[in-house]
Image (cartoon, rainbow over all chains, first blue to last red):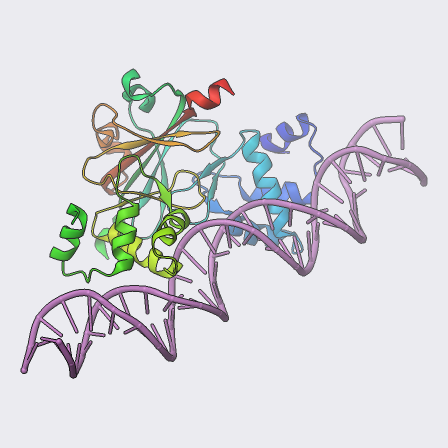
Length: 138
Length: 138
DNA sequence: TCCTACATTGGACATTGTCCAAGTCAAGAA
DNA sequence: TTCTTGACTTGGACAATGTCCAATGTAGGA
């Protein structure tokens, strides 16, 4: 059993076939699928899995911090299983390819007290945009 | 005539009543309306303005750089008329309030060459999240 | 094995955005 | 001023993404 499935079981999750399949689809590096893509991959292993189940499972994984929700383009949200290590995203403006990247320093530190307007600021997400090597050539 | 309307005229835009109204709605600081909110405000001045016209006009304003498109939450995009001065956004995780903020330094500089993977990186957008003063008290 | 609380299903519905054919009108020409 | 024309607007259909719910199924403990 994968680490993720073990952690889910430890949290008291019922390990249904559907949840296993969603977890398997999200397993790996540099995975940034949309909910529909997760559903498509999951359907290959478990043909009758419902869209609603995929949405439910993804929301649960996000709320317990196992998966990060990324919205880079105002279109469908993407789901990033690399929640263990802080990182940011580099997105190709042309084809939409996403890479995980690790900038230097803490982005939060760049926001001075005078620019916080009484907010308790807890998080900073950075999206870098540009053209990927493939799109540069094309 | 506002500066914005003058700039649009200089670009050869036909200054229709609809475009004037959309430009007026977007006039001001700290405006971050969704397209539907722009449509609602515009409808108060020009009751029969169509949704499609608002979407068209907003897209055009974005493509000529007069307005910036902001998607902070994967829900509806918001439109920020403060395109003249580079800035980032601070968002309340509870109520969704948005403030323009000015972090120190260039966020692009924090991404080392070794983390660019052959991309030509041209832009970095930062979203800070936390609780606003109102939501802290509540 | 049986129970039951929790999970899944499928379809209706909501939100946000895009597209298009037909009608309208801003602004330059005469 | 009036005319003309191509750009603009309209309204509604459609697309993409996401949410909700009542009925049904089932994992895991007793």
